[in-house]
Image (cartoon, rainbow over all chains, first blue to last red; front, side):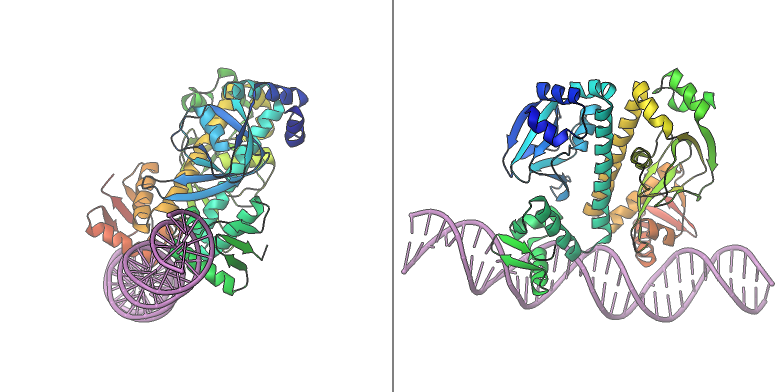
Length: 210
Length: 210
DNA sequence: AATTCTTTGTAACCCTTGTTACTGTACAAC
DNA sequence: GTTGTACAGTAACAAGGGTTACAAAGAATT
């Protein structure tokens, strides 16, 4: 674990801190599609993403969903972080987008490391910064873009995070992520295909324009 | 200044820190409507809100605007905070919603206080937490609500932040904040008036249902 | 091969929101 | 008072996107 930690976080954390993480952190593997955190959960551990990717979603009272953003290696979930510190319930749902390896850190360490390690403080601040910017981008997307543009951006983001220009997803699944209906997605996807920007197959979409 | 600082922040900051703030901070008065930070500005000072209220806006390349949230006494702008730490440009615009009194802190102090004062760390984390939740609420609003609901929520929020159930605003100004057109706002306001939820006058709106 | 289930394509329709255009009214400046 | 300007009301229409309904095509099961 130590070696992997150094690979993923060696550039930002001091050796002392990395060793502490290796000691108190517990490895956890999550297969693609599996839920990591549910809305309303109390968060007792903070995840550091080692490998894979995580999809962060928002849901309202009526069960309407919306994709917020993806997390990659080196990221941590600032929302979770925020919940850890405040001892509040999770406001979001996290689902493994790919097979994912996490290191879970007990929240008691948070306070300790924050005063002890400058690199940890910087990491936490940087995470908040990154997450606020992701949220801003999400707001830009839903506030200023039409559904066809949102869809294209979604496909590009998803191809990138899965490191594969062929996306495995049904129209219905995409519709959930973008908080719209399957019919709308089918309609727009067909239009994108006619325009030569994607190629449609059953259960998968190839993004031609990246 | 010391006395006011104790009133506004005495419950969260140690006396030592409050004295430091009083020493290095500079008071600044901003009248309602005046701009505080523009998109693209480099941020050299961090504001602590003593009195008044600030409106935080997002704008895209085409000049389309959207209100993100309001800040009140005791708040700081986490976006600014985030920019200070990262030495990046502002992603948002801040405008005084009411006459506002700020204490501006040089960003050099940030790093120092973060390692020195636990209460400062907690404040910064709490600010991030609050801002992330505001952003989530903003996303909920634009993603899950219709324009009539958004408008009513906007009027209520604005009445609250201005501590006055009579809102001074033209339909056009509201339209900018909600990123829609004047005609749409006029239409929906008239409907809200017919439903007995507000009362319309020229240049002002009285919110009856709070 | 026949059946069933899942996924996709598409038409028709409706509602919300955005656009254009025109009118009337309050208010300030002259 | 007359004029000009900002603000508000409203009609008519357009566009985007949500809904319902149904058909066709793969894939899985029997």
